[in-house]
Length: 162
Image 1 (spheres, helix red, strand yellow):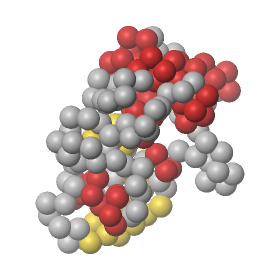
Image 2 (tube, one colour):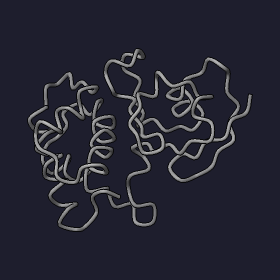
Image 3 (cartoon, rainbow, N blue to C red):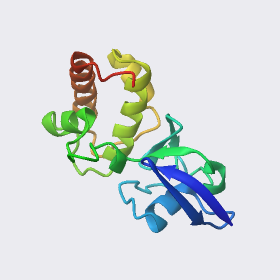
C-alpha cells in the first residue's frame, strides 16, 4: 500500500507493507540511518523520532499509522541551508553527551521535544523526559549537562519553545 509522509519537511509517497514499522521505513526506504534500531521492542529509545512534534519510539509505530503525519528525525535538525548543527546537537558535542553514539539520536530527539514544550527544565524534568531512552555507556551525567546547556543557549537566543 502507498502512504504519504512528510519527513524532515519533505513529502514522500512510499510503498509499505501493512506490518512494516516506521523505523524500518525510515532506515531502509528513506536511508535515514540516524534512526537506530536497538531493541526493536520500544524499550531502549534509540529509534525515537518526533511525530507531529511528539516523541515516539518508531519501532512500535506501524508506517501506516504515520500516514499524513510530520516526522522529524535527527537528520532534520541541522540547518538545511548551512548545515549548522542544532543547538542541542552542538551541546552534546561540547559537553561530551555521547560516548558510542548509538543512543544519541534518540536522546537528542527526546530532548528536542522537551525543550519545545519546556524551555527551562529542571534536572528532574530532563530525567523524566528521557525515561524511555537508555544509554548503555552510562553517559547520563554528560547527557543531562548537555541538555541543560542547550536549554540555556536556546533561551538566550530565543530558540526554545518553537
